[in-house]
Length: 332
Image 1: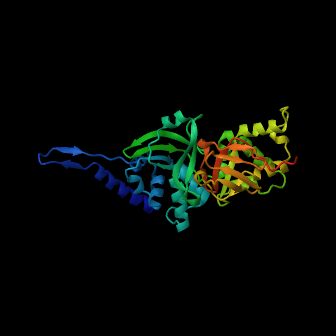
Image 2: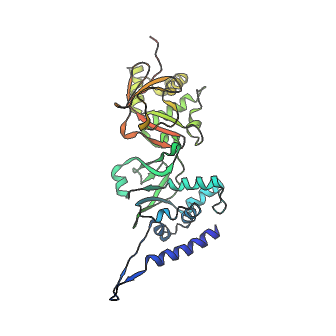
Image 3: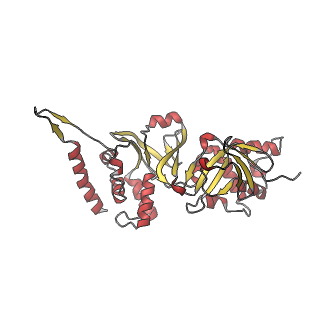
């Protein structure tokens, strides 16, 4: 780390000299051209650990390009926690470890746009894509909420927003944003809390797969998950019991397990790759219409894929939100 930081300081001086160079014309008039990149802004805020990590993974030059970039920059304390938790040594990374750290860093970078804190607050909550990649080189998703400050993937909070650079903007965060799993997105979006409850309920007996541990495992899958909203589960409960006296927790775990299997497909199928016809879930076949963006279960019940909530990409699969729970074939 000392070698990296020493070299980095030398690089910093060089960059500052270049940035402040005056260009003189024949009349001895001069114009000062100053370029303050997102890397310079990180330095101005003493984010030396981020700088060392960028240098160790050959990302320094990338972030000095034109951009624009939006960077969620972890504090030194956040990086120290990551290195402590993982045992990574930035001075001695294996090829695999360097690729991992590079992807983690890219999970803090949005390329092609300058997103201010006001942009996020105006949106309220939602998903955007980072420069990190998952299965099939698909860009990973990042979930943001703004009800209590700007929070990313349910854990990393912006502590210093809108540090403007000539090639983008830097928001300092208090925690490294880890590579997300399906579980990350299911647990951070409150509109999917009933899905999480269903997974937990199915796990209480003998599930087809151990749901929570599987969707939390970055090395599992990949899977495609059709995720019913809370309203979809509420409608199902009324469908099963019009009196409204049945809660999700009252259902038989084995029944919930059977239902969940019709929402999971092996493979990472983004919305552009949805077939027009049969899809083999781990429970049985359903039918997709890639024009109408619908799914039909074996009982002829149709669920709409929510077009604004597709391609939520994680390391172990992709999530598409749907508005109706799919059911196995029902006996007459």
